[in-house]
Structures are given as C-alpha cells and as structure tokens.
Length: 287
Image (cartoon, rainbow, N blue to C red; front, side, top):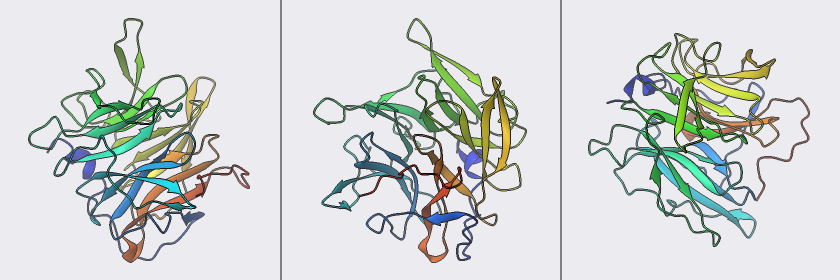
C-alpha cells in the first residue's frame, strides 16, 4: 500500500499500559469516547462543531465523524455529509482558520483504497457542505499526503512520502501562486530529517509547528518555533514514551495542544497539553 511507509511508524505501537499523564490529561468528551480510537479533532470557528478521525483500536479503518454541541452536550457522532461511504478510508480533518472550509485526506479516487490525497470542501452561507474537490498536483502526488493544515496566511502544511525527501516522509508547505495554481516546497531541516516526519500542525500565525516524527524509534510530538526566519527545535512534547502520538491540534493562540495516544483499555483517546504554563486560553471549546 502506498501509505504503509508512513503507517509503519505507528502500527503495532499502541501499547496497553494505563496512561501516564506526563503533563497531559485525557480530554475526549464522554459523548465522543468509544471503544474505537478517537484522533485528529478539528473545530469550527464558533467551537460548536467538531470533526475528527475515528479508527479501529489498532488504528486502521479510518473514518470521519462529526459531532455538534447542542443542549450542553456533544451530539451522537455521525459521518459529515461530504464523507465517502465505507469502505473508503478518510482522515485528518482540518478546518480553515476562517471556518468556511475544511481540508481532509481521502482514498475515494483510488479503486484500491490505498492512496491518500488532500481534498477541500466548502460550506455555504446556510451551513451546508458542498462537494469535496481533490487538490491538484503538485500538492497531491502518487504517494500519500497526510494531515493538511492551513495557517492565516493561506499556507498549507502536510506530510508526504513522495520521492526526493530527506527520509521516508517529510513535511511540505504549499502556497498559491498568482495564476491560482500551487507551489510546493519541503519545509527543510530541522523539521525534516532522515527519520520519518509525516504530520505537522501549524499555528494560525505560522510561528509554532508541532511535528509527528519517529526520530526516536517511534512516533512522538516535537515543537518548533519560528525565530529569525528559521525553525528552531524546542524539543519533544511531554507525553507517553511507550506509545505513539498522532493528530496534533493547536489552540487559536498556540498555548494549548490536543493530540491522541493509546489509553489502556480505552483504546485511543484525545489528550490536552498546555504548551504555555498557566495558560489562560479557554480552549478546547466547552459544550
């Protein structure tokens, strides 16, 4: 499968030990938590809608689910209207900063259900989702693309195992050109390395990047900060070392972080971590 070099970084590393918090706390709302693996959440601009990835306990069979906040509770999860029906595999939703659109990855174009490409879907003024559009080359490639996330400047960050990178997977950034097409370039070191980098969450101001990489033997989270026009490595995020982390999401001001990791007999759950000590940012959205 075309995405196996990336999935190999996480497959088989779920673990079954009870959670050691290491500065992070379980966040998954009770109305969302299930025996499946919940990951990669994204919120609408008003915080009343959440779209996320739901997978089997062994982190396969990826699906998109949606829940809305109504009457003080998250609604029963259901596929968003634009989601392809099973057995198509889809994942990694990310609302645009203005909340009017959403990026995600899908294999709906591939009869073998193996190649992930990035799609974009727009919501109209009445709140209805339109028909997803597959982004063109050079954003998409014959290899897998993962976790598309946009900043306020319109730059789109994503992971890809395409040829020509520094490792099995690297992080790329796509920007629109004057003709309406896309220009894609690798983020470069120290974000990219000979290891497998396959997901990157970017803050809205484009100055903080949370990386998922297997550079220590399995996939963990790393924080980078933009200083003087360069990315500076600030080290690994405190989370369980014995299991992988996936699906990072930064708060609007960049002071807090959601991510997913295994949580014993609860399969995978979403965890909250404060990047800024004593952050007063009221996030994630409450229901």
